Amino acid sequence: MKIRVLVSYKDSVLDPQGQTVRNALLTMDYDFVKNIRQGKVFEIEIEALSDERIKQVIPELADRVLANPIIEKFTWEIIE
Amino acid sequence: MSKLRFGVVVFPGSNCDHDTFHVLRNVYGQDTFYLWHKDHDLNNADCIILPGGFSYGDYLRSGAIAKFSPLMKELQEFAHGGGLVLGICNGFQVLLELGLLPGAMLRNKNLKFLCEHVHLKMENDQTPFTNQWQENRVLRIPIAHFDGNYYASSDTIEEIKTNDQIVFRYADREGRITEEANVNGSVENIAGLVNKQRNVLGMMPHPERASESLLGSNDGQAIFKSIIHHLTHSLNYS
Figure 1 (cartoon, rainbow over the protein chains, first blue to last red):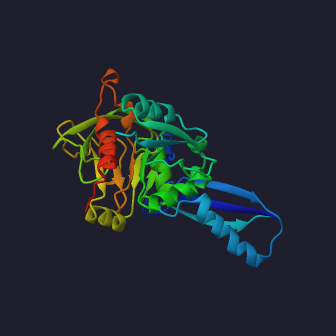
Figure 2: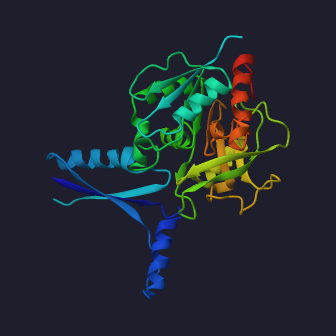
Figure 3: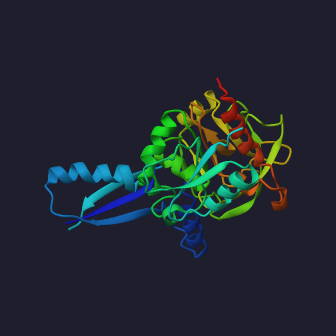
């Protein structure tokens, strides 16, 4: 099984890296780009677990390790 | 007077551990030793220092992996029991990840690694780390970091201010708190803060790099001298 966890800054936190990437795109005339938020992707291979167990442990490990809840939020999905 | 015992924690990737050790042992003449992060023994230290560097290569987030080091269990117990803990730069980031201090670090606002001397205004002289401060003095101490842009929610900032937890703020040479002096974009120009109990200090500037005039500044002495004064006089702070 494979899980994908996406970690990004909370909306209330400024993301200077995202802004810089946006500015670069604007200078290349991609002037339709309104905003960019940069994040991190984790692809996690795991042993097969029950749906119930996955719903418990993935948010738990994302909250404890992958993201810092003070500044970051996360979403996750089963991709394989 | 018997010597005090200072423990300098070494993580893989620490690189200011030797500087800190040198200053405490050779400049201040204290009994200083390293503590390996995988051990479970603080060796009866009076004060623990988490040094600067790049623990675990700053992978994931600065300080994020170091917080799971075995020794951090004993460090948490030591801090909760009132023991003095000083986190410098990466050590500050580890203290934030551990939750011993409130808030988190973001990348510097200009996305640059900053390595320069800065001026600091001291906001609270009633802590074990600042009691030997000369009034109204502005310190000149170097910084060297990529992730020093201190962030906390507005509720947390209010709480920090109410409890007088802000110890250092980035300032100009006259001690004025300005946007220009706020080199990394920190909320409220925060460069260092203590916990509510006043026994844990985290700071981004490096006092160990400013403890000998040969190196351009000895303003960092205010911090080490305060710790030594506090421990030898068992002071209390309200």
